[in-house]
Image (tube, rainbow, N blue to C red; front, top):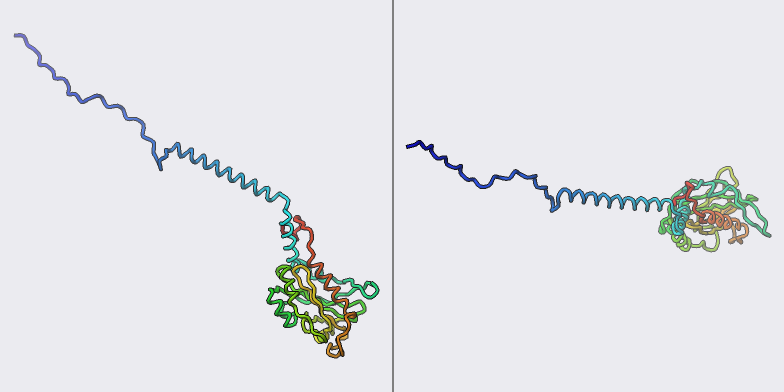
Length: 271
C-alpha cells in the first residue's frame, strides 16, 4: 500500500482583511469645523476693519470740516463767559475811557486803580449781595475811575455770572437806591492812596447805576473826590455831575459782553 502524506487543514477563516486606518476626523467646536472657524474669523476681521475705517473717515471729516453755525455760537458764548479770567485786568478796565459831557464834548476818565478780585458778598452792599448769591455770582471785579477834572470818582464793579439770562435776572432783581443819599444798594467804593480817588469811601457815595453785558452785571457808585459824606448833601443832586458813571459802565459792559466772530486757530478760542 503506497504511503499517503497526511492532508493539510486549511487555515481558519477570519473574514475579509482589515482596511488600513484612514485620516483622523476633523475636530468640531460649537458645530463648526476648523476651516469654517477660519472663515468666520476672516469675516469678523473684515467687519472690524470696515468699522474702523468708517470711524477714521468720520473722525477725519469731523476734525477738518468747517464748524456749524450752532457750534460757532456756542464757542462765542463760551469765550465771552471766560473773559473775566482770560483777559488781563487792564483789558477789562482800560487806562482811559471816553465819555461825553454837555454839548457833545468828549472827555476822558482816568483809572485810579484796580482792586483785587473778591467774592460777591464783600464787594457790594448787603441787599445786592443777597441778589448776587441767589443767582450764583462767581466773583466781583472792581476798579475806580476819576473824571477829567478830577472832581468825581466812580467805582465800577463787574459781577460775574454763568450766562447772560442769569445776569439779566440778577440785574432786574437788584433793588434801586431809595431817594436821597447815601447809596445803599450798589458796589462798595474802592479808594486808592496817592490818587485823586484816595478819599472816595462808602459814605461819600452819592449816585449809583446798574447795567449788563452778556453774563456780567456792571454796577457803579459815584461821589466827589474830596470825600465829603453824602449825608452832608441836603438833597439828592441832579445826575449831571455823575453822568460819567453810566457811560463808563456801558462801555465796560459792552466790551465784556459783545460776542466776537470765533477764530478757531487762536489759542483764545475753544471751537
